[in-house]
View (cartoon, rainbow, N blue to C red):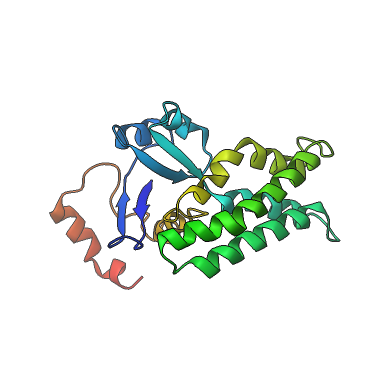
Length: 208
């Protein structure tokens, strides 16, 4: 599990925490006493963090968009899934344009441009939900967006927030890419420095 803050205000901060499973126990323990904004995917295990309102949920629009991409990939010709992707294309175009602005300017631009765009998208979703099958790929995408709508739009309430948690996802990339290479380097058991050094310095390991 990774907890990350980008370089927007001060140097980036990244914390990797090992847990045996992706249960809610790890984030509940790590974030005990935290107050503020928290951006994450919509994994249900995180829900208890937002119950008392001390932590504001900022959902990831890239995760929501991905479900419409999956629905669009099943179509041979452009359809309603592509209409949803057009909204996301406009959303992230705005985000690219305001990326280097101050927090105050980003907030102003979002209120003037992003909020009306999201209102149009919400109207589209409210109409689409009555015309899709719940377990159809498009139905899954539409219902996911509606279920997490408030959290998905919460980023528009502050200039320092982001529309997605792509930064944290990128921080996990070295772990995902190196997973096979790291297969025999350490384990859940604590490895003594001498044992670790001996394993890593063997000629067979150096040549791979």
